[in-house]
Image (cartoon, rainbow, N blue to C red; front, side, top):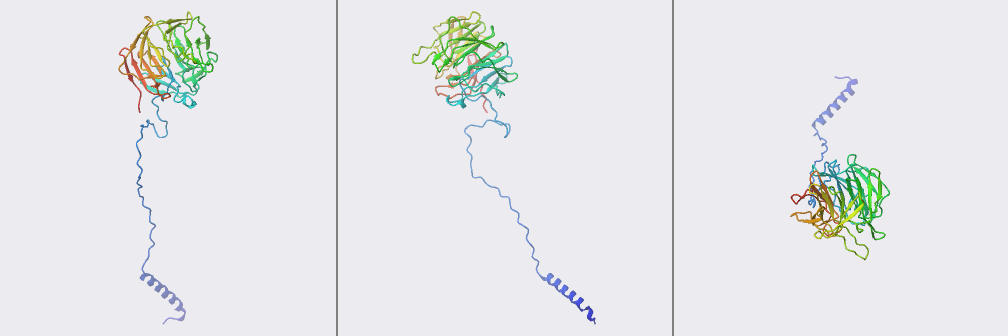
Amino acid sequence: MCSSQSSPFIAVVLISLCLALTNACSPQVSTPAPIQPTSIPVLSTITLSPPTVPPRPTASATEEVIELNPSPRGYVSMAYDSESKQVILFGGQTGDVTNPANFSDETWAYDVATNAWKNMKTPLAPKSGGAGSLVYDVESDRVILFGNARGLFPSGDTWAYDFNSNTWTQMAAKGPIHRLGVRMAYDIESDRFISFGGYNANRDEMYQDTWAYDFNSDTWTEMKPVTNPPGQNFHAMTYDTKADRVILWGGDTETGSSRPPKDPSVWAYDFNSNTWEQKKASDGPGARSYSTIAYDIESDLIISYGGYSVGSHEMWAYDFNKNAWKKLEPDIHPGNLSRHAFSYIPDMDRFILFGGQLGSDQFSYTQSTWIYDLNSNTWIETTQHP
């Protein structure tokens, strides 16, 4: 028998035992774990149409688009840098003349060995524009730009480009001014740039003055020969090395309502005697504006391409010694062009042509590059495509 002092202890033990038995007999309810969301693929219902023009290649998503050629442009000029073996191109008009944004200030170099254009992205450049004359100075190893314009408003600035340092330098401020479509050639023997003509839109006047630029002294000099060609603009000029003459041909002589005829003559300028000589030939092409000529030193011939306001694919060869023209009719050609760039590459004995207005569609330009071989009378398009 237990004593009365132990009764509370026994009661506590019995209660605990009963609770334990009750829990053991009751069903255990577990708390479910949170349900993790299932990754469900989202099915797109949008179908993308293929691009109409393939995108140009990019090195990565964050880098600039690779530019394979200068953009389509007209009123453009280029010159061959014989020391660097590069064809240098500047500016040009890329669209409607009334929009200032449609003029370029880009400098491009074409490597004749690799057939590749490169945007030089110069830190400083002339103002954007077109219609200028770009000519290479052999003695100073500089490309000289003059007559750059936006629409009817030429700047009158002279600039020099050094490919080796990729720099433009603004040169003499005093020289021929207020003239659109002025043209220039480099006289190697005299180390002078010879410019002629141009159009003053404010006065509706064609200039017929002759100027010489000396890079070494950075000076322009008006030559004032006794006789000059008729005033004109957008004519064509080049230098005949063997004859030591600057050659001028074509050009627009029309002003106002009088509409005098264009001059079909070839004019030859001798810096040493400061004289122009008119060379008439009955078998040559009709004069035209927006044409180009370049001298082929290997064949001793001057080659012309295109011209007229609506373009042409006519090609002619002019022999200064015989004062005779011969029409060239290659089977394949760049098309009916005007306002294009055209230069001779003596290291290759080839001509290069770029851009211009194709046909009569005003302000619509091409970006094609073509190479011409006079010996085989053949054109090859070398435009790089993505």
